[in-house]
Length: 312
Image (cartoon, rainbow, N blue to C red):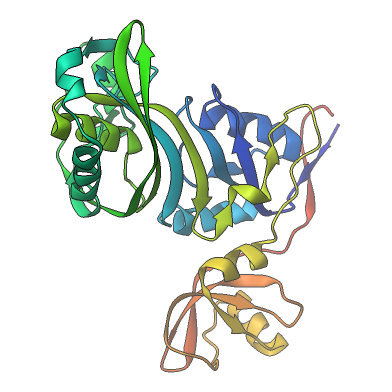
């Protein structure tokens, strides 16, 4: 018999638990929301916790534009030890001698952090999702290949030391540095940890990571993800879009014209993408405006409920 499939769309903000992959969250969310059309706006490593932005049904069309938003993290960097993966999930490669670590001062750590702030060139961790000739870098590394990735430009707009602590790991002295980082999309916090340790000559890797913000979406808006509970509440496509884009208010006639593929005259500044909303506040589409004329970049169909074949 026919099964009812939800096409209610929107953006869900999930607090990802540690140990879960981003794919795990998407897979569980498909069942919670009753649809296969679920995607996310930027992967979190299994070790990491925090904000994962999900798109449901037609709102997956927004994810392309959300992926590039700036991000904020809190993290702990362990100085004095390096790992294969540049984080706590990888095998420890070795520890710095105690005498060498003792020579690292708070001022030197602060100076090294400052040198990694701003517009920098960063080499992603080799055990990452960066593609090399069509295959993920981590897959090549795990198959035994030696992978060397190219440096790429990223922006670390804020790199703040919150606390410095002398600790011990497996009997070896280390320095744990709690930090807050605001950065551009594509920045690897693991690589910042690795490079901070390299600059100080003692090695470094990431032991904790939490994403607290993506653009104007905050982890404070989430509830802990529970696949056995009710589906998380959704931010409507319109509310999500106006957090990211300028808003264009349409008349009923302009709304209809856009849905028909026409280019209506609108008021407002030129540029795009802009969020085009009908008189009821529904997101009609993302548009570009030039010389007072709107052109659709991507449209957003109204929510409905549809039937799909298969057993209920």
